[in-house]
Image 1 (cartoon, rainbow, N blue to C red):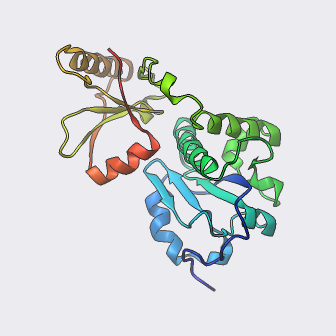
Image 2 (tube, rainbow, N blue to C red):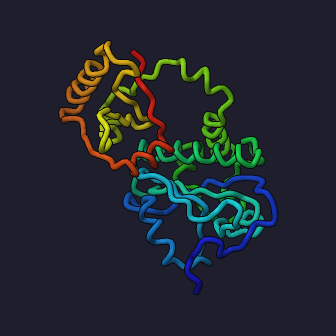
Length: 261
């Protein structure tokens, strides 16, 4: 038995040529911080991916220039970059799809780094290379067919490939309105040492503050959103505080956007 350490599988023979997005078999507690502490005590030959992403952020287990034993297939191990969408056995559909979105964003950055274009040749499924149910949760949610799930992954990745970011900045940013179904994913937070209030609406992070002072619309919009949440759910909007370090990691997955007034 050899415990995992970065580089254990060796350098890959060349530039990666495709990606595989996995689903872990983890509970709601199998978050990125869990894998960060668990993997170094895990028998490497049993498998590991390059990246683990969950609601609490990202854990990069190994460098992309190294092989990862993630697919049960030597070709895919050597040539594919690999991600785990974590908490697949315990998250709600909304929670799981939010983590998928974070994975798509990270995959897009890696594909741009290596000059890869998302298509059915470059975005593959684990079950194409091994007898496995993986990606079981994505499979159930997005069509239960190889091409259907591939196309969902490809469309998700393409959103973050940065074809025209400048025009996106001019589009009004509005929070998703709370419903009883999505309310478990919505919460507000502050960052230690900052004065702004942030809202995570289940898909994106929004700052309820003006880029320039004077309009007074930020506080009014925030009060309206809190009131709507309570009216719909019968509860106060959950609030937490993040450290500066936690926010820096969070902001790489869900970049903060200013609401437009």
